[in-house]
Image 1 (tube, rainbow, N blue to C red):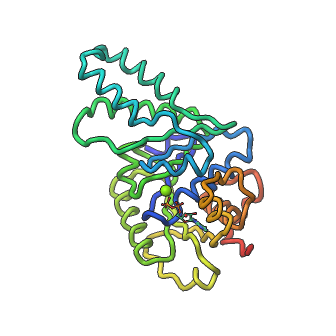
Image 2 (cartoon, rainbow, N blue to C red):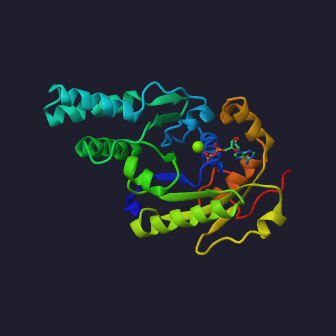
Length: 269
Ligand SMILES: Nc1ncnc2c1ncn2[C@@H]1O[C@H](COP(=O)(O)OP(=O)(O)O)[C@@H](O)[C@H]1O
Ligand SMILES: [Mg+2]
């Protein structure tokens, strides 16, 4: 279970459009400020938005590797299990895109359920052992934790639930936490509210129990404009969202070598 993991496996989940990819990219950027950190970013959303946010290009997804193997199995070419495993291992490492001390892997489309379970298991085993090579793994989830569990990793150390100020967003976050609690698949979970215009808005929110709120991220023009231009947040000037993401992570005990003080959002705008 997660207690055994010596690295951080952070998964971002929440309703579509609330800011998972943007906050995921911000987390990666913060982690990369320490050149010693080995960081693996995994895009588990078929839309592959994290690649753009991080300025990496995807040549092959895990789904491409899976489909190639299935074709080979169907053609009777892949028979020996050890050989298949070795070639999968090689292909998965080859599919990693690199940008300085960042490694990036895209999962691709969801697989057809029910068939080729053995291939899926092998791929997941490789992902788990791959994660061991990194200090931090940041997973941009599709929506719920089920997808992350099924397609990427059974357990994560930190589940970061993201919501905007909407009732729907908060309810989705609560449902995801319920599911995660039933599956006991995380060590710590926290909620982050994105795109607020001030502390008054934050104080007025009715956050469903037992969600633990880590803080809030301000509406940040830099994030929006960078996304509009299809640029990477890694290359953008830091706006107020970055400092707020840093503080939310500090609430979960994830620091970045600088002051780790507990606090809410910096009202930096
Ligand atoms: N703090 C923020 N300030 C301004 N715009 C934001 C912020 N966070 C996200 N956005 C914008 O909201 C939209 C959805 O964000 P995104 O990260 O793609 O959400 P998700 O991955 O949850 O679908 C994008 O256009 C993004 O630029
Ligand atoms: Mg996204």
